Image (cartoon, rainbow, N blue to C red; front, top):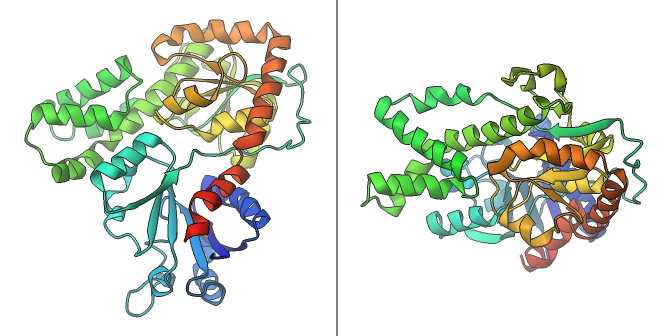
Length: 394
């Protein structure tokens, strides 16, 4: 069994935070860890060449970090350290795969795809059947209070928090209109269907509309076409994110919004937004720990889970979320989670006010949710899953 793991830092702050959580889990399993700092690439590369020997090391990374663009990891012949030293690259893709079509064409020799959503895994199986699919691995959570000593509901000063950025959907009009009215009509039909029927994976809806227009399109052509529509994924994500928060604030409920862009939300009562941009991962956990309720709007993971859910459960905030197939399977409504429906956003204020007026019920959910998540849904548990189901066999 290989006993060394390389993790990446210095890129996307969220992924760096995840990597440090995985580090603790891997170290507890006996692995030696090397943290490659992308902000100090040359120095890190020099140290990595001393750390990683052939057949004893594995790269575990998010969204291809370390695999393609770090020139210091390629030798004079253009061969990467991963290929030269036969190092498996385990790539956890935290977005839909159609964001990275060009990267799937130049993967390392030993490459394993880890999907955070089971629909994403089906996408890889259909369009990239040559890629080894490691396993389905939902995003994990982190607790600031692993012993369960988080603040009680009554002592939390914030009623409801949302952690995540916002961008007005009209910002994507330039992509919708870029090829003229006919294409704009086509794109808007897809968007309208996803808004009306939001339980569907967006790539499947987009593909069906393409098939309707081009019945004889090949699988290869469809694979090349779908990435040209990723703006629809972003549009829908921000549309529902904005609608959920707007529904609350326009009905008199103050919402702490952690992330950029919330000052641009079109609404009647912007005074009910408490806006804090520029907060990093640890600060988001602190904000959740100070909040009675934590709102989650899925970034179109229709058969997966977002770390907001587990972070909320692990830090004592009652999580209020829309559905996915996976979380419907593992969570129990009214016991460790509160669900709302994207098709009935007008019910959100009633749900929130009902919860805020029943502190005893919220504390029961708070405790049940923590016990559920701390047993199986931290990043340390994800490290164990990776080890048991993939790494120890490499």
